[in-house]
Image (cartoon, rainbow over all chains, first blue to last red; front, side):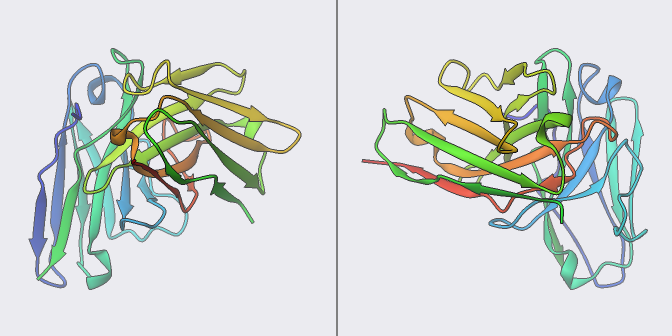
Length: 110
Length: 119
């Protein structure tokens, strides 16, 4: 059972925007950096955001990240059918002394 | 090219053992934190283990005492030795790295290897 909570699913029409929340606590998000991943089951997860709000080379600026207190948010603008996937937040948990992932959010393009 | 390639998965009976390998190319495993992550069928991603640059290790509570991660610097390969396997260990196992320059983020992932624990 994950210590980071995400909505099970979000959806929007092509071209629209979605946001995915990730709720944690002071032992994880509140005092550590957050990363976000895109994952199609059976394939390698892809790093979208690191250090709360930075994008690796090659990730379009349609993807953005932010953090406030013990919560983080991933935003996807200009939604495309190719964005349909599962998205996970992730950070370090100082109390558990280990990495933790969010529960995951399925993004659907209507 | 920077990449990770896992191998060693398969079908194993409960209580059995299996060793997964993760061969790295394009970078040196000993200069990074090397991590194992798994995804059980229908479930989310779960962190399993990490081996640090100095060789120290940490494990998730669900595998501590049963799994051991290690690396062979000469082969630039990381391993996950899995003992006393249970049905709930059935998952795709991914190898990934924390390059440290990104704080606690995993930038390179392998394609994964499937482990099925069943009689």
